[in-house]
Length: 165
Image (cartoon, rainbow, N blue to C red; front, side, top):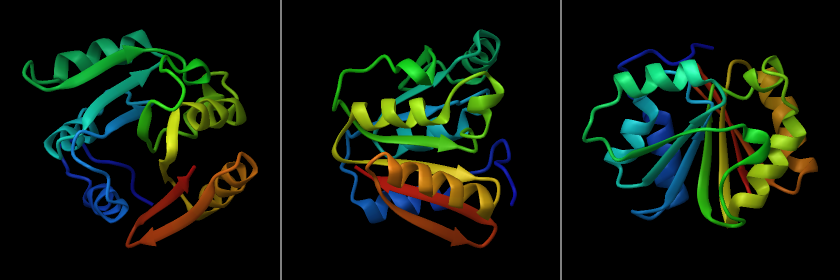
């Protein structure tokens, strides 16, 4: 599997969001954005309300330096284990090759999934791009155990887990 490349659009993300029928203005959060602004810019171009967060102040500082001043992206420093959103306030949460980093930073994946479930609206969607199929299988099992209905998409060199609340 190939992780994102800087400056490259994510056509599979756009395709998935289109197939899900996410309306213009839907609130979308990218968790673990790191320094990759491309995902948020693409979401913004698709007319979504875009929020990004990362636990690392250093990553967020570099992210803000890369982000266009006129980009309509709300940038937050926060821990995904305690998302700074009201219950049932988001339409979609995206992990773009970020889920595997949660335990590396000392987090618990099941706690993060519980937080995402809490902040998603009814029928809200979690989209997780994975490095490999085995990761997708374990992520899908975790989402099912947390109450999501799950679909795994394997297309070309990308593996994506989509969980619907």
